[in-house]
Structure formats: structure tokens, C-alpha cells
Image (cartoon, rainbow, N blue to C red; front, side, top):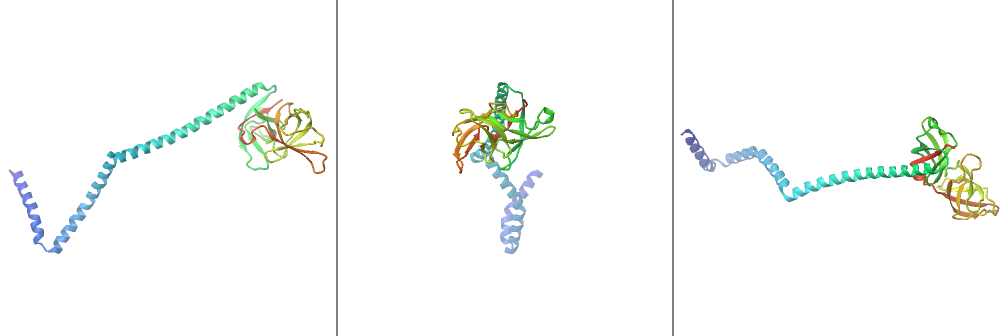
Length: 261
């Protein structure tokens, strides 16, 4: 019975409220309206934001936007993972090629990884992860499956520095495989080498293959150096000015073999 009377009272209050607002002064009703609006503004705004979030989550547009964002993140992760796997595969392939080449050569070698490179354009050198403790000594030569790479210039206990074929300080005794003309190949500092001590009547031509001659006792005979790319007579006509391109990919060396014997 009490509950019924309470509901009646509430009904009477809600029915009488509009009449009360009509008979009250306009300034007072405006104040009541502003107070009521201020009181309800915050909860209504929260309800509105919550409603929009639910609508975005369950609507087709919101669902597909969320789905595409998830797929994009998953795709980026797969791309990064694929790049890592490809790098591992390429490294393994290079090492297998190097080991096959190592077994094919007739002299003793030490396998080494390139751990640093000289960033300058004139001094062409690298650092390898093998040193005196591993049997690496100064003036030993470096090779790769593509050909001669350089020569050890400094050694430490666990690492060594080597100058490449193109370094101005590099020199090696060489021979033209076709004509058997002998010469000295030296670094020219511009990703090429030049051939010294060639008289004007020497038989050296473009596309000739140049290999080590074995003279001097430092480097074995028959290791590929490169291919002749330019031959011309000097200004006085007494000598030949000839250049070759190294066969080894010196700009992308990652693993090398050190010639011990």
C-alpha cells in the first residue's frame, strides 16, 4: 500500500511540474533550466561517447577498420621476419660457396669475416675477425671465390687490417693469361687497378685476363685478379697505360679466405 501511494505522489509531482514552471517567473524558470542542464550534461556526454564507441565497434565500417589495422600490423611483422630469414639464407649460401672454394684450392687458407670497412674513397681497406692468434701474418693475401681481394697490412691478436686491390699501396706480380706478358698490378684508388712496367710493344689487349704470376714468393701463381678494361700508349709513346677491373666484388665483401701458404 505504501509503495502504491509513493508512486501516486511521484506521478502528481511530475504532472504538476510543468504547471509550476508556467506560473513561476521567467527568470526563475531559466535558472532552474540551466541548473538542470548543467547537472545532466556530464553523464549525458559520457553516455553519448560510450554509445559512439559501441556503434563503431559493431558497425561494418568500424569492424573492417579494426580488422585492416590488425592485418597491416601482421603484414609488417611478416615482412620483417621474411627479411631476416632471407638474410640468414644468403649468408648460409655465401659460406657454403666459400667452403666449396676453400676445398677446391690447393693451398692452406683461413676463413675470416669482414667486420669493418674504411668509409673513405681513397684508402680502400677492411678489418677481418682473425688475427695473429689464428695464424694471420702481415703480407698474407686475401681471396674470395671471385678472385684476389687484397693483402694483410697490420695484425692484432684477434683481428687484422687488409688493404684491397684498389688501394694505392697495393702491389702484386701478375701475368697476362693469353700473351704471358708480365707486369705489376697496383691499386689506382678508383675501384680499378693499373698495370705498371709495360713497354709500348707489349701484347696486352682489352678483355685480357690477368692472374698472379707467383713471382716474389708472397702470392701463389694463377689466382684471378681481373680483366683489362683500357689500354693506350703514353704521351711519349714509350709505354702502355693499361687498367683492369678486379674480378672480386670488393665493395660487398663479407667473408674472405686468408692465404696462409
